[in-house]
Figure 1 (cartoon, helix red, strand yellow):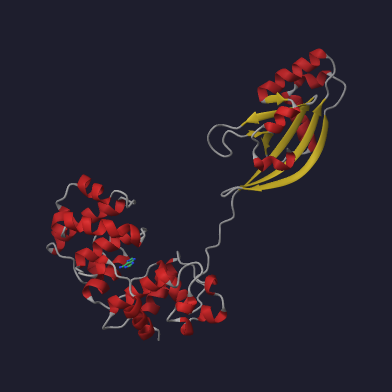
Figure 2 (cartoon, protein in one colour):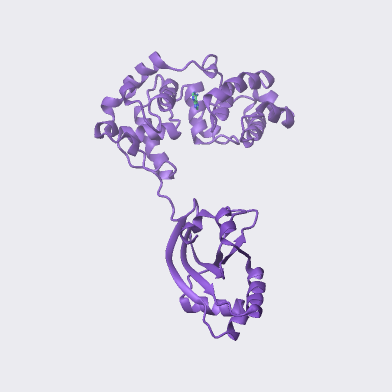
Length: 352
Ligand code: ADE
């Protein structure tokens, strides 16, 4: 059982934080709302100012939304502030302006979810209920070497039931805050300080030497795949390039001719005849040389490319003029020295 080791450590090392000095259910609610998705150091300044302006649910319920948002300015995620006002109104209308002590009743209040309901019930009302957040899940996954994925609903349930077995009747709030402090200062996501951990003797992940393998990481979804055919088209010594649009993927960079799908040599030839009709009038065929496959992985997308180098047959001035006119509809033919200086999309590096 980890309970006594964790509590002894907490009483020796607990962080001195303003919301721990004089606690009311309301002040616990405000601090927990501020601490969701926001670092402790950021919250330090906001917490006393907010309580001074809105000292109880009644004051918050009757406050101008703009003043509340102004007081919240800089903390981010403003829906939390709007939810606090809604929640305060609910508390005034349904609970006579006082937060209830039962977790199930707390859960009815807008903006209060399972974690916050457990935190308020245990910290402010000494109810032996878990407050399961990411820290708590990480600590328990390591303790018991559980390869669970934090964001899955079944993980929350599993960890909740394990914490419930360990939480002491006589110090539930301290126990939950000890988990918060351990998670923030010792059992951190990366490079946990196991040498300073009061639970290392009981920690299966530590004993296996695999602390960072727990909890399990969410399997990344395979990125969608796009197939492209890349044509490096030469008109004499000039190369046909295009500038990509100023917004979106690879914005504003230069590229070669990029066609959707993977095209065979024959399909490329047909595309050339369609886009350079004057090719039909000369006896020489376009010289189409495969450049092989290439892949580029973006954060959210994968390109599978097939490249061709193409030399268009130039025979006579008229033919050259016709080809140039068609090329200019597709992009811009540039001489090699200029081509070398272009800001080029690195995804097409293999064909540059
Ligand atoms: N993070 C969330 N709640 C906290 C609390 N009460 N103390 C420290 N860090 C926290």
